[in-house]
Image (cartoon, rainbow, N blue to C red; front, side):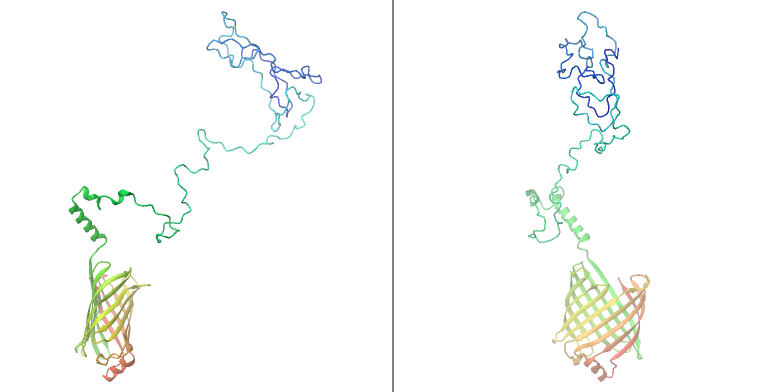
Length: 421
């Protein structure tokens, strides 16, 4: 009974005609005949009085207008039959895409069947269509697409980074004040749970291990014998320190002499050293010098450190107890040939603000010493070396030496050991 009460399918409508407003049950006029219902309101045609309530269990959703249910007390003649498609007409043939049928008035007649379709053979499938949107998965809310997720504050996105500048710099983002609870309570929260004395000892040990390391070192930079012009001599240049990274106690010592004679010169320095740059220390203290000509006690002010390109620099000015001002500067550089063979060029210059005849020192540039040493490191702490050293005196210093029967220029071969521990 699925097709009961269905009407014959409507004749094929030419493409381009809108049949959406044609009244249910109306038949198009035959080709070439006038519409007998033209001008009549057919909107209520074939409507009947409302049907009585339908017993539960019957699906009457598709029953055509004008059908009546079975009379009360009489068995339903359609019981057990599928009525889901009752009253439906056969689907109209597909209309070619691209034809707008929306403005066709109710009662308008389609073109005669005998007339050819003016659009036959034309592909109208994409006419007036927009590009289809990409399919969205079911259940996805796209209403907020392109919006920032809630809870994200983007107001400071264009702000400059929080660099260490002065507090009143308008380019620095404002800093929020500390919460009231941050400055209340004990300085160390762990003291509320553990013995404060034990925690204080643990913090002190942590400070020593990570920020207040005490070190001690002794460096014998030169312990050598020299040979030149029929004279044999020796020299010692050693220094060391004890202390932390910032504050240290430094000591320095230099000794020069001949194997067959007395000590020509010896000095000892005791200095307080404080780091003012990552690789440079400021040093001040006292120096005691011993010479055959006379002893001196000097106030020392200088710097020592590692200059750019790995030059080790040591420069100091000395003011003696007799008011004599002198200065000395040293520089050396370790040039590695291999991991064990190292060449060390070295230069030293001595200056004086005035002539000191007693010490055989002239004003201005007094002495220049240039040398190079090649060492082999059996270990980092122990390395023998050989080298050559040239010394030249200038000005009144050269005159003082020549007056004593000594040469103002000297070249020597040196052999020695460099060690530290």
